[in-house]
Length: 320
Image 1 (tube, rainbow, N blue to C red):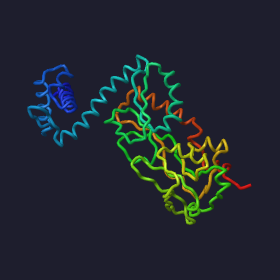
Image 2 (tube, rainbow, N blue to C red; image 1 turned 45 degrees about the vertical axis):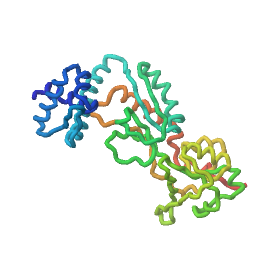
Image 3 (cartoon, rainbow, N blue to C red; image 1 turned 90 degrees about the vertical axis):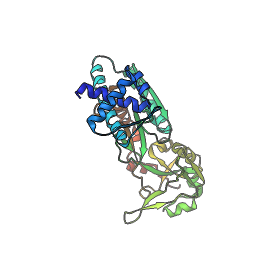
Image 4 (cartoon, one colour; image 1 turned 135 degrees about the vertical axis):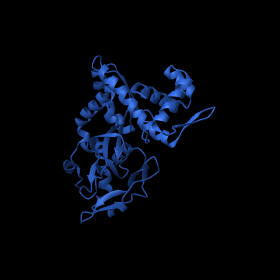
């Protein structure tokens, strides 16, 4: 096979795998089903493995076919993006960008970044999904995901946005009435506000022992359990108890005097982070590249995302 035959064969294979049918693949490619079948047979001969099992009704991938499909899709994406990169030099950046992020980050951080993005690239359209569920970036059809938590190793490109430090907070009225805990163990005497993740887990809080080691504190049973992290800051500001919240969620309430920090230096802020992720491709589409770079620059200027922990000492509660 020469290079042009390779490309035709790979396109026939990918379309057949995605549609599950030679006929549907043929319609998309503008060739006959027989030509699709011949292209795939030639590809299998070159590779020396069977990629597909055929029946009269459908085609299904072999184990080798599943592995090859992933690599073939990357190759076709690279070709498509190579064309995009050349065209982008001749015309204004345009296209549709799908973004997934959490409800709170989307509302508080992503939305304020969009007006300047869309003014700079008027031919760009954006679709943002505010959802706390864990999505499959590629299979669910997203271009970009903005995620927070403990980010595991991934085949995706990961660009850091900020650290997501957590703190323990309560309202001045609550602390005046119930006292200020001096140790994590004294939290047992207080009303605690906990977060439950969508999977049903209530994560423990962490604190530092005298020797510097970390220990776990279970906030269960909590006086109130919520699934949305920003709501915990509202609940604490409403005098309902002590909550562990992200600094960026608590910061407006700290500035307004509606929340105070407790156990600063004892409570461990965690190793959470916020990142932008997108599929690993040899050439990133211009519409995605400009969006990622614009968002990173905007988030860098968001002071609420970059608050040093030492600066929070001014928001500690001291009884009158």
